Image (cartoon, rainbow, N blue to C red; front, side, top):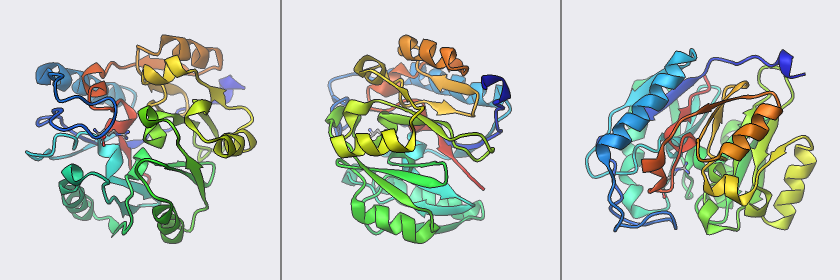
Length: 276
Ligand code: ARG
């Protein structure tokens, strides 16, 4: 079965971490006492970009802006499906300046964009897979935004409740192994305890063959991974999860973004997928 899997070339939007810092604390991973090594952050991030390019993916860049230290987390800016953009409305006031910066980029790149009215943090909480959008709520994105997303894209939205503040965005607790768009079965990898009991049952029903992760995998940022259907760009700190993915026929590609973990972000957070 794994022999039939083929990687699909993706288009990713990223934002260079020129102004990256931890200058406020809006999730349990962040502490303003923790110094950030910006040079190391820059080289880790560059390695991620080079890894994507090396495997045949396209990478677009939005310009970073001073005073927006979290702008590097491009995944939070929007959800892009069928070439249409649903722009974010950030929960934290400190991040609201990012909305216009990303809106400007998407419009200049020729996309139609609608801004969310309710609090919504893009692909941080909105994960398209198998013809649905899995939508996290509990800490950031609201159920009102889930309804807006369904109405805008006409794609069924499945609301999932997150219950652990360390896994405050859906993309810290779940990632897509295969989105199903290439014809293969859609599948995900997730940490069940990050979800309410009912949401856990929903995931079990939708993805009976999912790869499940432990708390160790999750705190090592293993669930904040990106997959092209074959390669899984994964935190090297999550070695046990990477081994399990390899046993399922995926090819783990370790990329260390340890500096970004200090802000509560990882590989997926730095990667906005543009589905045209
Ligand atoms: N410091 C950022 C925040 O708390 C991190 C965002 C991480 N992004 C993600 N997609 N999980 O908003």
